[in-house]
Image (cartoon, rainbow, N blue to C red; front, side, top):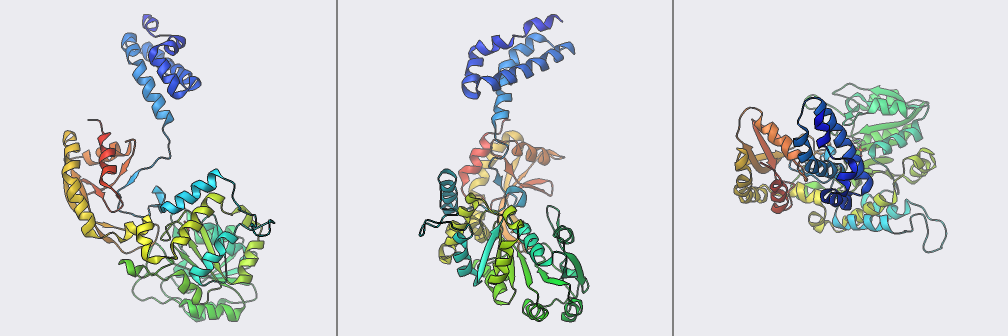
Length: 460
Ligand SMILES: *Cc1c(COP(=O)(O)O)cnc(C)c1O
């Protein structure tokens, strides 16, 4: 019990030089809380037999650590060296400079969000994007909501509430984060009518299911998987004709969707939004933060009377976008008016289009420098080939030739432990384990210094 006397009081800590320095950085209340918590902890340790003197000596350094840890943002930038460009768990698309600037301005200033600068009267939130979206997709009208899941929910609820929605069994998807189409349909108040089989669905399956209770036909891009072999699906133009004859809208949910033909950047050709619109779907939905390279958002484009019906749905208000993302989206869409410079301006597209030669040269440059930083940890560093992927269900079966650093040594679970240590850095470095080594795919590393600076914070 004598050990307690060696511990200072809260007041003694606060008036000490170290205590005063902490107060200047973190403020009085945070320091008082931290000191109380630490002293409490130490009294328990002394009761359990630890040496009070040693604990008292360690107190200032521990307080500094506690307060620094509590002050550190949980949501802070990391280095995505996973090889997955649109990593859902790492926040998907990175915004263009123009989009970041527009978002910052929208955060700090009043803006004409729902205010018509020409008449001085009330304006509409969607007006800022409608023109651009119609220009880029060829659609008559457009609206935008929180994300593509919300876009699909809103369309289903607008046209299918208390009615039936026809979907092919081959398209009843689950995408990450527990977005399962049958469950979303139930919550939208829609009765699901499944047609066809897992691998083959024909036009006659849809026509047989169409009836007086049909609210809409849904076509879904099977984003994260592909059915191969003996398969058949009804092409969108034919499905549009069937829907038209039945007097119901066709929704084509593209998932990622792309405003441009990606084959010009060496990627697989995916149907563009403009093509899906031209194929006759009354409505097309797609994401803002997948291949498009903007902030999280869900777009609904299509025929005017259908979009107007959606805008009258009270759920639209609950799913609407905030001014910050609207500003970022407008700036992002503007960039698409100049496709030739898009890879310079849109980080997502720049990363996807980066050549393996460029990435390999960066790996060659970095290997000796990273090797020098990791030698003390018992790891050696070599250049390796990797396969990157787009991620977020975009271009699901394709991988893109890339290059990276292979961090090996130690044996056993040493790579896992190194991986865990890199995740705790002030700028966490996220890679993946392959064949007993930690791999850092450099596709998304914009400049060498970012990685070197992050790794310098490693303590031996
Ligand atoms: C990703 C995806 C969604 C959901 O989009 P979010 O923007 O993530 O909400 C819906 N449908 C398909 C086909 C998708 O690929």
